[in-house]
Each structure stands twice: as structure tokens, then as C-alpha cells.
Image 1 (cartoon, each protein chain N blue to C red):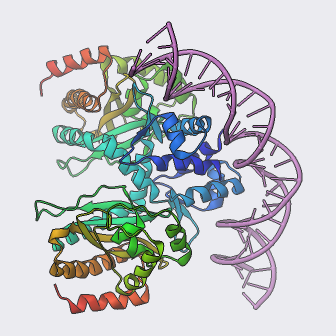
Image 2 (image 1 turned 30 degrees about the vertical axis):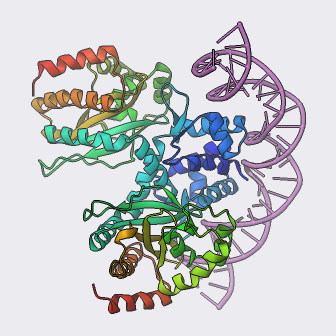
Image 3 (image 1 turned 180 degrees about the vertical axis):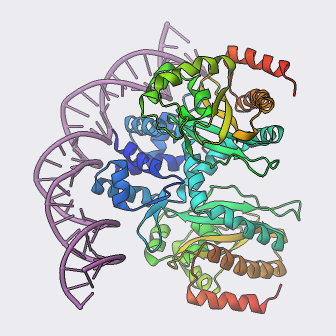
Length: 266
Length: 266
DNA sequence: ACCATTGGTTCAAATAATGAACCATTAGGA
DNA sequence: TCCTAATGGTTCATTATTTGAACCAATGGT
């Protein structure tokens, strides 16, 4: 593995749950030698990608990442262009809508919008990484990924996050044909015990699946009626985002979603 | 130089002016061998920090940078907390306010706010890199940087951007004591011919200068009255941002700004 | 049909990365 | 107060990776 990859691995260690690290701590987590980790961090620090917190010596992400993100959004406004669709989706369903991007084999939350309709709602955080096997977004993406990538993902450990999490790779695989046919993945309590959700895949210009758009609701509110509304709105929203991003739907999906949109008027 | 630094240099090559690159192009610009550049890009691509544009083979920044920025802002809300101050500053002065951060020796625009008061205004872009010698922000920061860093910055070429740009290092140095005493740097037409601007430095918890906050206006509108209003509002705004970020002003500055705020009521 | 340029690849030579052991500083507890 | 056990940071001989000139294949313009 290249040296650069190790440095980027270090950046990947940061998360909402662990936003700062001591040197030894990070070395342990990333599996690098302490001296190596130190040298890598020093280089990242020199460029402002990490910084040390004032008095303590812990490391956290530095301001240089803001510049890159700003440039990326200015040139390829991914988040900005998807937000209006997310807002419409949250409004139409009365539930939390969210959008995830497939980044380097990981499904990363890029944006979300809450609905103001209810006192309770499914909560989300930007930049969180979603497990493929336990989320509707994960299933939606898995169903449209090349077999090689699916195999790679399902060969990793599939942790049990709730009593209902599907932890067998074969069981996950068995779900995918239906997801592929419908163009929508659904889960119930597999990620968070009291949340049910549905999600649809997104595609790039080459027709590759690059992410998903979803809706999550407290289990108690997910009636069959709401479920159908969500499926309807998701088909529309996924088509919209894919179109805005200049993507292209697989033929079969375009057809099936068309029928969903015709058959179940809002 | 470490390999990681070379990879980070590649990321640093991206800008508003040049948001995508062919391989050969980027190799030339970054001064790396084409093979090296390719290998580095491949590693960055594997992690989603760059991506190749659909049909063409050009590279651009990838979506992974969005995740990092999102995490950084969630944990250290730099931009978000400064924006209200920028808005107040733009409102109070009727001109464009902006905030820059010292990142890895470069002064980087983090945020800006336009005023709706006039049909013309000084234009800005996020993530742009400001030349120290030609901007009020640059002078404000230079005046409060350790001598070693000042020397490093002024030893680099100082390009003539307009007929009025100060291009002599000694001439820049001569300006700094006044800026240090006032706590405010000012320029007139040194960056963009028809823009005058003023800026004040920002400080971190250790009292180090980490950026600046400024106001830029079309030269024709910068009367002595407006200039005094801007100086007044800048002193306030810089104190506010420094306080919000948990920074500490140098003693002398705190005193001088206090007198500005007392002496020139709004 | 040609040439110029591009992205991408190869492999021996050169260089940089590695990691066990070490030091210095700090925090906490007895 | 002193001792212990962490921590962040450093060293340097060994090792493995990076490097770059030359090369290839593909594309596009003339």
C-alpha cells in the first residue's frame, strides 16, 4: 500500500464519534507504527489538513479541507443542487429525507432535510457512513452495483446493530433482486430499532450507481399508506436528482419508476 | 520532500481558475514526473479525493473532500460562526465583507457577504488565495506574523497585479509598523484596480494571527466618511470573530481597538 | 496518412519510508 | 513529594517504495 493511502486512511479515521485523536490513539486505530503515524500527521499538518488543538496535543481536521470542499461545490455543485429535491421530498412525505454518496466504497451521508410536520422524527448527521447491510440506502445501492463490488462489501463483517439487523451475506443477497426490480430498497428497524426507511439509487452519466436518496420515519408512523407515498415520491426524487446531476437511469428502472409514478398518483 | 506532501501539492493545484486538469498538464504544473503524478492521482482517486470526468479523462476534485469539510465544520464551526458577523459587517458598511484564513502559509478566502445597498460592489469568491502584498487582508496578517514567516512570504515573487501594486518587499515591510499600530491594513487599487479595502487580523487562543476580516468597496464609493465607518466596524467585527473562535487579542491591539470603538461612534 | 499530443505503463536505480528502541514531558496516585 | 505509567516526539540502520526516462497505445487535428 502506498504512503499516500496511509495518510488518507488517517483522514478517514475522523468521524462525528471521534473528531480528535491523540497520536498513540490514532496510530493504534489506523494500524500504523507510531513513528510513521507521526510523520504522516506532520505532513498533513504542514498543509493544514489536520491541526493540533491549542493546549492539548490532540489532532483534529484542519481548515484546508474547507477550501477543497468549497472548490468542489463551486465546480460540481452536488450538495447544493440536491438540497431542493430533498426539501420537496421531506415536505411531500412529512418525514426525514436524506442523500448518500458512494465515496471510495463507503456510503456517506451528504445531506438531509427534516420535516416540521411531527414532534418526533428520524435523526441524521452529515458525513456519517452508512452500513450497506442495515440501511435501505445500502440495499438500494448494492442492488445496482457490479457483482465484484457487492462481493467485496458483503465479505466484510456485517455487524448486528439491532436485534433485527440482517447479518448474513446470503440473506442480504437474497433481498437484492427485489430491490433491483422495484428500484427501491426498504428496511425496518435494521439500523435503528424504531426507524423504518426506504431509498432509491442514483446514477452518474455512465449509468453507474453513485449514491442514493431516502426517507426515514419512526416505525410507528410508517403505515402502508405512508409507505406508498414514500415510494412514489422517492421514484420522482431519484429521477430528479439523477437528471440534475447529468446522470442516466438504467433502462429497466426508468420503465418501472414510470409506472410507479403513473399508477399511484399523489 | 515526502510523498504525501507531493500528493497534497496536487490537491493544492486545483482552483476556481483551474478546476480540472489533464494528467500531463497537472504533472507540468506541479513539477512532478508524469508517472509519479499518475500514481499519486490514482491513490487520491481510490479514496475519492479526485475523480475523472465522465467521458474525458481529466481529473477534478472528488466528493471525499465534502465529507471532511462537513466533519470539520460540525466539530469546529469556523465558517458558520463567522457568517453572522460578516453579515452584520456588510449591512453596517453597505459593502462587501469577507473573511480569510491563514492555511499552510496561504491566505484563503473562507466566506464573504455582499451588501444589497448598491448596484455595484466588490466581487469575491470562496476558496480564492489572496496575495499578501496586494491586499489589505494580507497586510493585516503580515503585520502580526512572526518575522520568520514574514521573511518567507516576502522572499517569494510579488507579482504586479495592477499599476498600483506594491512589488518591493522593502516597501511592504515599511507599511507594517503602521498596520501593527492601527490594527488595520488598507489598500487602494493594488489587487483590483477599482477596489479599495481595509482589513483587521484575527487571532487564535495562543494569540497567533490566523486570518483576517475585511471590507472591500468600489474605489469611487470609498469616501473618508465610509473609510472611518469601515475602520470602526472592522475593529468590532474582528474582536467579535476572535472572541467567538475562542481567540485572544494581543494586548496592544485590544487597547487600540477599544479607543477606535470609543472615539468614533457609529 | 501523418504527426503531435494525450493518458497510461515499465523496470532498474535511487530514495524515502519504516519501526524498535529511545528520550522528555506530563498526569495521577500513593 | 516522589514514583509510575502514560503520552508525544525522535533516532537510525534496515527495508521497501518511489522515481523517471523511455516506451506504448489511443486519440485528434492537419
